[in-house]
Length: 231
Image (cartoon, rainbow, N blue to C red; front, side, top):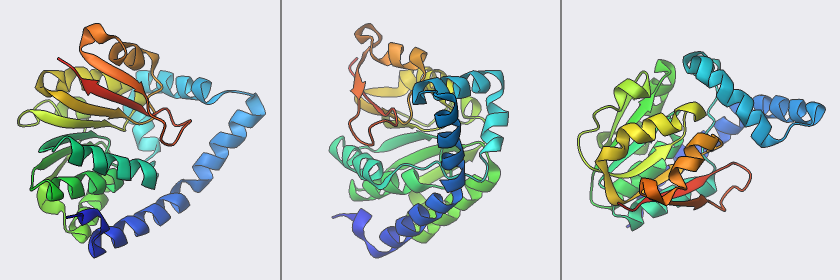
């Protein structure tokens, strides 16, 4: 069974990917122009954003209230595949946005026989749109989207975690991981989208911390990091 290719899910994802390209096009063009003008690398640009997030990540999240900043189709399908491969029952998502990645993951839960996805989204309007999109895709019964600061909303996710997606404020990747860490099953998968924070990368790439990790060659240049819990 492959819910991902069913009518409602396919239609909603096609619409959301198109809407995301329109909503984010100007922002990405402006970032690209600024990088070209300054000669800054993607890593340097990300470092500036991480510094701003450490000062006030809530303000940075609010600045992106109208942006999708969603996963690509290729990454979405990869998320579906790894959720199926690890037979995920409980998934945690930091950074739900409009629900694009959530739909890929919830489709995998449906095809695994059921389960529960706990998502966190700082912006209420985004959370509302994500719920509507999940409802349109026929997957709303599998997902609990919690509004607010992930350091509060994800403190209790209800049980052992099979898969964790980090796709919110870059500066919070390590704090969120450390908070979820006691509940990660051995063999749990963590995907860090745009994982540019050196502190996060140093942590998951240090085997002494109980992880095996490496860059993911999907959407190269986006800084995706694939990690497995080994303890």
